[in-house]
Length: 292
Ligand code: HXC
Ligand code: NAP
Image 1 (cartoon, helix red, strand yellow):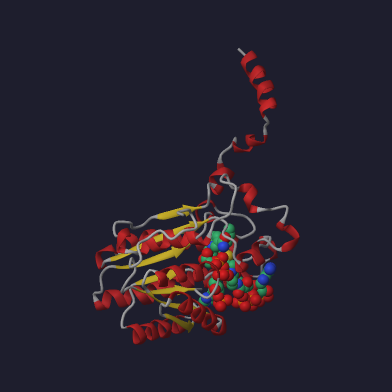
Image 2: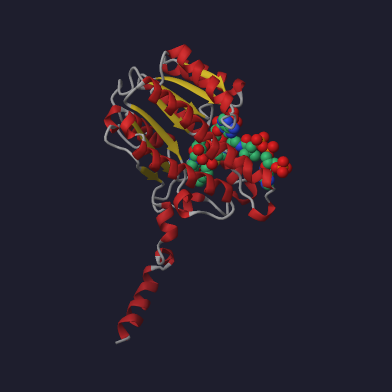
């Protein structure tokens, strides 16, 4: 049966594509990688923890029959990014698609952050994305390889801003600006740049740092979402696969929000009137109609 947790694209949609997914050993990066492998891509997954990457690569290769290459790379260090890029070229002969998915984040009142804490998030999210994008992009320009694409995973507070995750909000806003800027500047080299802004998708990495046990019940994300549920990983994988595939060839400079309506609910002035019951509406309507 077809539903939102089903696979959307035809089986060979990413055949002959080589994809690099930063932060691909866990969470959403792992779920995207699984689907890209199922669609015929070869995928390199990279992050700091090689043991974790090797476990994921083995699990996903066995599950999908695809080729998954684990590579240690801290995106904060451009020398490590360049060496990771070279290893992908040595192994697969080319790379077509970069997914900037690696991130660091935690909730904290901003006045509690040291300068280094703020920098750490900027370094992983904004500078890490810059390190990968510049390395891959310059190579594509130099080799005149066309039909390449970069997909950046941002957040909805990249455009609204948000308290208590201020370094992440600043960094993701920068990544969004990079996405839109290069979508125009580097289109002439045959590159497309797009972004996804996910709402809450349960992952250990995000939940441990953004929804720790003591506040989990009170701040249940489901309560904020008009559609009444969190996202399913396959929904995000489906969107990502479409955006990087040749079916998405005309999509450039776009950020697609996948959040069940969450951020708009927070923005609309009267949206909290959903708490008013039908009986109460009867009383309110009479009172309002009486005011001539
Ligand atoms: C205040 C903190 C802190 C906290 C760390 N620091 N945690 N400050 N409150 N809870 C400070 C440290 O004291 C240190 O500053 C500085 O931050 C760097 O910390 P390290 O532990 O040395 O850094 P590092 O080992 O590089 O780890 C980076 C990390 C960690 C970001 C702190 O959490 C991490 O590895 N995260 C990766 C995975 C992740 O975050 N995934 C979630 C993505 S979710 P000082 O001054 O003491 O040296 C996401 C989406 C959000 O992005 C949207 C959801 C809807
Ligand atoms: P996650 O599993 O913690 O993913 C983050 C990944 O980044 C990890 O695999 C981590 O691996 C890697 N990473 C962290 N620092 C790195 C560094 N310096 N160099 C290289 N890799 C590094 O969390 P997730 O929820 O799947 O997040 C994935 C993406 O989705 C992030 O961009 C996040 O901002 C975005 N997002 C998630 C949600 C959500 O609800 N889950 C919502 C909005 C946006 P190592 O620890 O091995 O390095």
